[in-house]
Length: 417
Image 1 (spheres, rainbow, N blue to C red):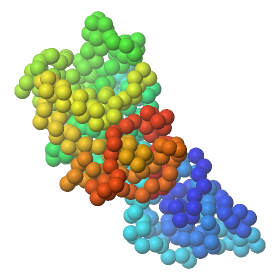
Image 2 (image 1 turned 45 degrees about the vertical axis):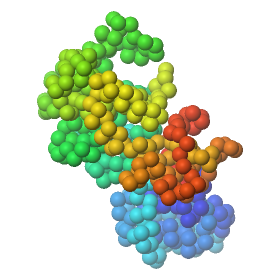
Image 3 (image 1 turned 90 degrees about the vertical axis):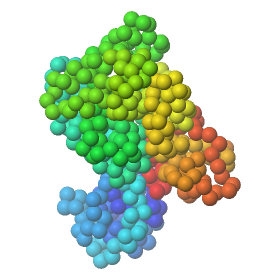
Image 4 (image 1 turned 60 degrees about the horizontal axis):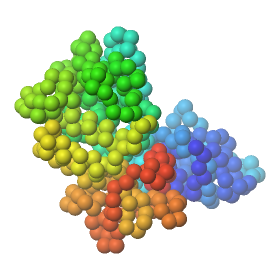
């Protein structure tokens, strides 16, 4: 996606196509990535005002202090109309505070990459399982470890990305999302890091047995018949069976997969476990599994806003299906308004939740991005609702309620960051 940016909004890691303002005074010797602040400063020193950026190629730059650009990427140099070439090497780098201002934007980009890679790995797992081949655990361990590291360093980045979903890829995205939610929840509960990794793997594989369920049942838009539901329930046993045949999968990981549909009242499946027979990890996986299933939009149903899903989880806990104490802790972990949730403000604008206010959980920090009348995207400053007397949340909404796309929203916010 090509986007024209003011030079003041250009950041390290962007891919520059050309100088657009002034139009004919300067030109780039070559297109390429902006690998350090010096290059950007060189453009500014020549009074370049606007440039064309290929947003789809934006990437993470590991060291923005680097004194030399990556050898694999040509440094864009500026050529004047008379042909005098200006190097970027004479410009000093900016202060660290300017560089770190955009760290969250870069971590969201990294989170999107991890999510996409996770889906690709998940697709290969299903392919192998369907053919009776062993699961390739090296890639699973690697990607779940990367996710854990990312969540440990900045849980808000992956929380935002969880909202970017494709309704036609529910099976792949659901397993990845449950693994991420499980990891976030486990870290919140201060569970040992080694166990967190095992929980993440178990959640990543918890639905691999669904590949054994016929498509006409798996993707049926209406209510399943008793016979169809009996077949659907078999997926939990299939998941455990597939995992048992794969060397290196721990008992804890299999526990997560095997118990994610059990209920405290004994009416769950596949074993009908009751009360204390369901482990802590099984109870956690059930909450994460249901929450993601409720929030996800599929080809035959709209997902619910997160706040409504919290109400449903508490209702299930009141019916003795879920652990009420863990449900309340999960809600606290996610936040009353989860990071990445879209909310409608009383100023008739939409905003995305960027971070929580621990002391005032119903008034998070948000970034407005869209005005409802007239309907248009707009630049907005971060708003701390805990100190904004004239701005509060009306309700939690979904982007598609307003014919918007979460991918589009996140990209817009990333450009504005």
